[in-house]
Image: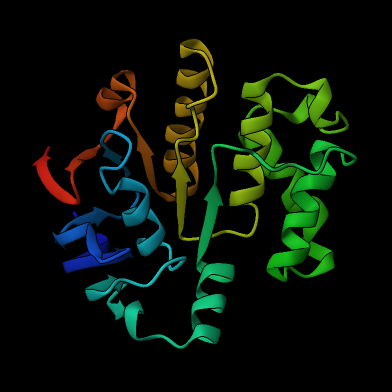
Length: 226
């Protein structure tokens, strides 16, 4: 199984007064391409810090992150911005949709920011919403949708510019179990149809059986892998 991402001895330290907090401590993992990888652990375990490091939102204190064979820890800030804009998509617990925009407009606006040419945006926005099962809800605004539907709009927005990888931080935390599993099914369908790689954080045990790979973190250390 090919790897999309490999990390080697990844460390991230933060200072809290005189103390040093080791948010990540020599983390070495592999993220298989075209699969769903889950980072699990309790609050404060380091899973979000790891996700942000993999997505170039945060720089590790030491160690390496190889993305498609390139060490992204050595990229300049400008190159990191370009990497995030072109290669990645992000989904957060707070879906952060524009309340005054329809589902279609939210997705199309995301593509503008990503630099997708105008000629491609309409078709791809419609395709992306159809992929997550919202073809009939394109004209609805967020307040007219359920939490699960809003999260699927956020997924459509994240995949519309054809990223290689999606990073999702607790995407089902605010949803009930049924809606959470529906969103996870949307993830699996996207992996099958689009070939996207997805890395997500969660502490929900209901999601573990759906993943292709699971890393469990505790105090910044990988304590289990399956």
